[in-house]
Image (cartoon, rainbow, N blue to C red; front, side, top):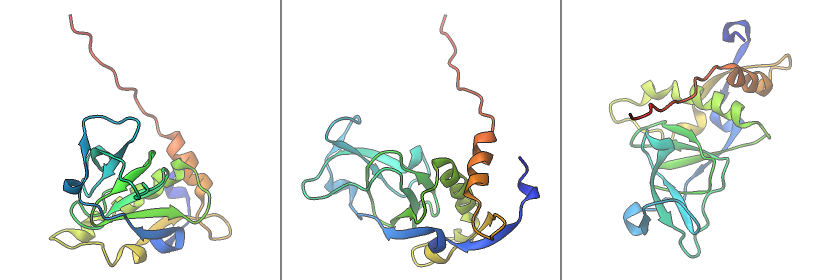
Length: 171
């Protein structure tokens, strides 16, 4: 599959996603745990590491976690650090969630995540994406109707070859 054999069109993030500000919790107000398990949820923050998960915390009465399948985007901190959240999660300060308007695969979401992250350079020197994220322009491949070609995006990600991680035996 070749990315250069496609037609592209600009779409705003808000054309593709419902953009929401996260739960806006402070980690120091949560009870941190050492592991994930029953009654424990991921705490996603503005970090560029570990899929954005900075801690595991106990569920808080009356505070529902964000649902699995959303994309998290840092509006501040490590701006535009963007991840697909495969498990329910709480979100920290200046973290946005993107919910797709159409039913698309996780692979298509991963393709779009890479396009969002290509815009990180626009937010250097302390610039934040808090006000501009919904209007951020994304160059996406389109189908014959000029709509985002989610099937191509999915197939492209599936076509990438990944070498399995191996561990060395200690002898």
